[in-house]
Image (cartoon, rainbow, N blue to C red; front, side, top):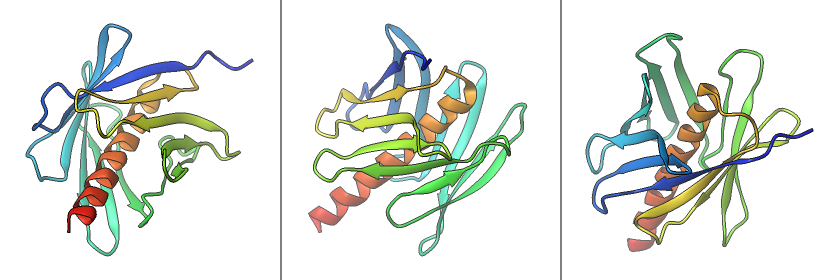
Amino acid sequence: MLPTPTHIQVKKPQIFKRHYEFWLKEQELAVLDYGKVWYSEAIFRVRDHQWKFKTTGFWKRFIEVTAEQSPYIKLRIHTKWAYKMSVSLDNRNTWHFKGTGFWKRTWGWYDEKENMVIEIRSNYFSKKNRGEIILHQPITHDMLLLAALGWYEVVAFEEHTSASAAA
């Protein structure tokens, strides 16, 4: 039997600051905070755990993930031009991130059997209520890390497309 999906709201309390809060019902669950406005480095915090995301490269983009606490993970994730990526956090499962749809694009993390594990819906035009993340598995640090990595990629995609449209 499948667990009941968990809905997490993504809020952006300040319009000009790249600071995102992940809310489960009425409780703040995690925070994704960018250091500067046009900087590709962000800190993701869940209670006493913290990860640092940094995008490097131009022709070949990578996301570097480092943890400040146990388990001390250090990942270098290759992202493709279509903002797709694959991640293995525990060397047992490989998760694939990709977008579906064109006009109302949704993003998701899929397992090796192509079952959706995490669904991400962005609401770019709302500056306060920025989106929703739906977890189809129980909440763990790994699932929250995947959700934050996915949101980090969605924000990069939206900034890239809006900059392309403005040019």
